[in-house]
Amino acid sequence: MQIKEDSPRIEKLKKKARRISTIEGSFSTVQSGFGDAYITPFAIALNSSDSQIAMLTSFSGILGPLSQWFGSRIMEKQSRKKIILLAVLLQSLMWIPIIILSLLYWRGVLTSEIPLLLIVFFSVYVFLGNLGGPAWFSWMGDIVNAESRGKYFSWRNRITGIVAIVCTVIAAFFLDFLKKHSLVLVGFAVFFFLAMLSRLIARELFKKKYEPKMTLKKGYYFSFWQFLKKAPFNNFGKFSIFRFLESFSVSIAGPFFAVYMLRNLGFSYVTFMIVILSQTVFSLIVMPLWGRFSDEFGNYEVMKITSILIPAIPLLWLLSPSPYYLIFGPMLVAGVSWAGFNLAAGNFIYDCVTPQKRGIVVSYYNILNGIGVFLGATLGGIIVASTSINFMNIILFVFLISGIARMIVSLVMLPRIKEVRNVEKFDGKRAFKNLILKTIGNQNHEPRHELMAEKTTTKN
Image 1 (cartoon, rainbow, N blue to C red):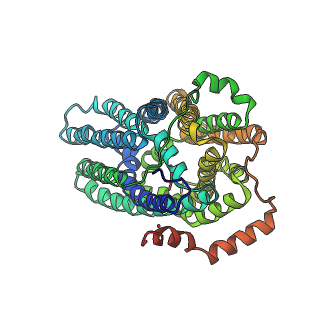
Image 2: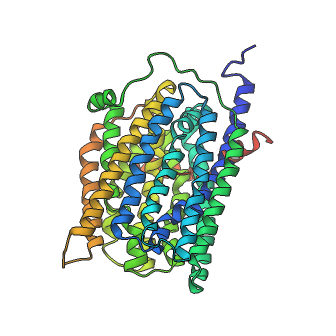
Image 3: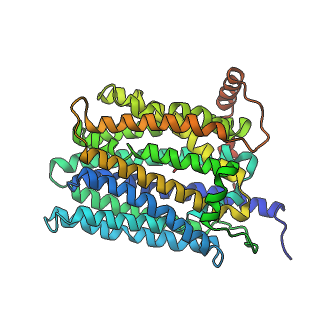
């Protein structure tokens, strides 16, 4: 006997799946906190050039989304769970050659070749990890109800954000200690091993997670070229073009914030990570507010507000090199704005796209994003490597270009996008007052509901 999708049993399985997803996300974030977050500092420790660091971002930026296209096609023949389990396993194992690179450089073997090998191995790592992206996005869309996506994902992002803070702070203090004893590369190897182990634990949790059945109907598929041709004439297409241009403008500066702090300003790993993680802290503080705001007033309104702030982020870096200023200036603005923007952008896709087409559409959307990252990071690398100016630091000049580009993209593209949900009309003063009061008064309601339902419950 087939169980109806709206039956109490199915809803109970979905609640359990959401709880498991939060725990799984926490272990996956350990991989990010010990691994992904330290790839650029690792590349700097390997004496990679600025151009090589830009390549690290640009190549992985384009290969990840291309991998998602392959992943979306595999969904025609394999279940979403099987795809994710395979992708997570292969991605986890890619930490092994990266660990070996760290130990080889520490021993003085192949030192000139290792920065290029890191680009290759990390690009493969990103490619394999992204194979499961469309399947995960589609799967989560089926277990999280539309009316509570803002609340759930803001709660999940808060939990994973706290885990990220703990991991990266521990790593920063430990690396600073090892640096004094000329063992920093050994420290990177240890953390990359922990990243691999945590991702494998996350894989075991995926096995326990309920997967609603999904059958792709005949005719659901359309090519990337068809997607591009229709993009200028429909709402989601315009949104995808906006995200492509936004990714391009952001990535002009993206690879160089770490370079600027570690090389130009000479920050220790601890100071560097405190500055970086301050953005996460500010994001965690405002995440519940953005979740409620998006559920009540729509995702487009969130993107409109945050897109006013995002262009200011790289421009604020021009004003002072003080760590205190960076924390309470650009990183505060970045934490508040990107928390809302990323949450709204992800939920906007769920609102616009039918479940049948989520996998293929999100892969095309991310391909456009990846092309934007590739082109932006490449342009930033070319400017840093080949431009000679005397009136300001070349990296700060790249930040200036990125800020201006972000501003132009927001002004030109945002008015072309429309909200697709029926939401309450936005009234700024009243909305913020009511939402802040609701958020404070109900701070723990959603988490308790999710966590207790089975007893019974990020980022991007």
